[in-house]
Image (cartoon, rainbow, N blue to C red; front, top):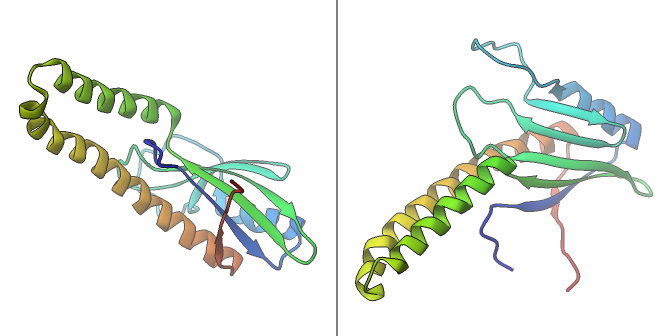
Length: 162
């Protein structure tokens, strides 16, 4: 199923125990706080870890409203621990972005001749959809690389039964 909002589920498996994986995660996550300077002494992620669940996002030194939020949990399997992660944009940004996309499309449809208006609106829709998707995926790939390096593991896409 194709979704309008960028969203991805994936797993990272590691040979660490559940407790060791939680400790590794705590080593790279700091609490959320307002950042004013360009401090180089910061961890790669900010957020919270509660028990085996976590909600984190990359710390970036520039503005990107589509920086993904990584919601996840650490699950203990037989000889490995698995980080099950769902990446999504901030809810407010996703709502606003969807509203603008639907509004632009509906405005074009209601404005008059659909065929003539379609060619005028299509570039705007592609731009307003393509740029946020690219920004989201750029930050998500950076976060995945950091997590894979920290846990010395390969990602596994989640395959859902249909």
